[in-house]
Length: 229
Image 1: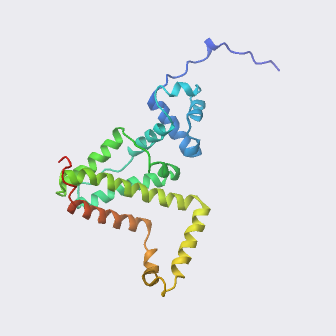
Image 2: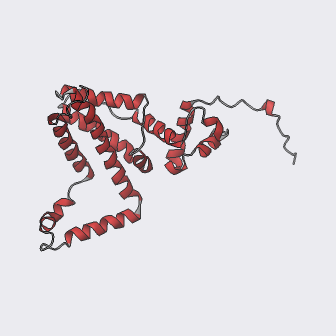
Image 3: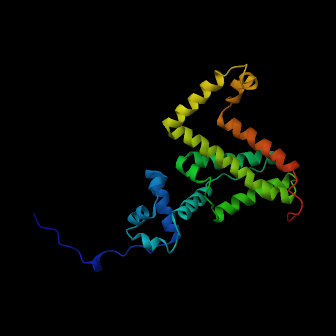
């Protein structure tokens, strides 16, 4: 058997130049294959055949990388249809947002504190603001309302992603269900009366109801006086 002759570095094809887009793309590949905990600067550097220090030129830290991943995935969110009430279209946009997070449970939890600032995040905010404006929501209330809507949708995705991913959380949910159904009417009469309703509804139904409740509040709750209009 003929021994393999080592190739000179000069004969090897040049590696593609590092770019922020390339780093984010590699990170999404690792996310899909191995999960968010594996999306570290060291792991992405291995994927790109470079050193971790090289990545810091384009991404400051892992938190910024996670935020960039989220922003990239926001580009897959469905646009609001032209027909239907503005409230229904807000629900459709945010429903698509939560479904995107449902696909990546660990990213859903990270999104609670992640601060994306890329083009896709700006497009999402612009889309929601346009729909609120269409519904006649005053600008100051719309400005604060977008944050509340995204918080609700993100927290909902993170909560249910955690329940689906961990057997411990499933056990905790079962324990809560037993506690609510077994509560004494003497000590907790309102819980006893509403026990089944406290846990009723699908995640989709609860999110829809929550969004409609928040939209009603945004439309009718002025921001504090003295805030910029």
